[in-house]
Length: 155
Image (tube, rainbow, N blue to C red; front, side, top):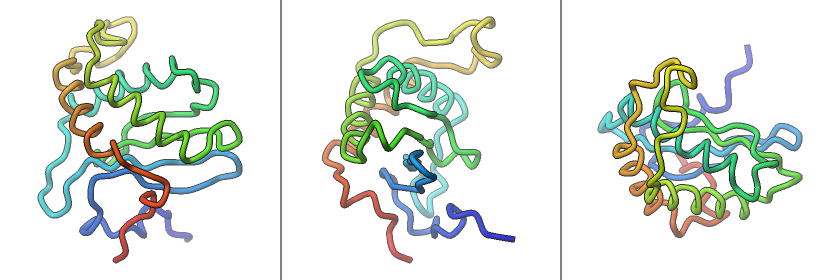
């Protein structure tokens, strides 16, 4: 059986950052890595969920919303995937978009998006202060990110 590409990345040397995970036709997948290597420091469930709600909302309300395919957490809870239409958005534009939405997420002062039983099956697990803190940390991390830094670290 063919090995999934993300399983070929050495997670012991992978540092927090922004990486090009794959291209499938015109769909580009960015890996937004939050986990610190060898420490086990992961975002909590409520942090992951809260960042997902804020950033997905900001992406889908941005000027590039038509290029957004998906934003959501990785199953292993070490970060997020951002999928976008590479025909509508270059890698450089996608980086700039993520820098913008995480910066706005850090300063987000509106009600938590999707924070009701009608809108979310786990709405009680949302925290705007946690989302803002995580967005601020990641915004600082990727503030100077550029295309040449999208490459996974060597093993």
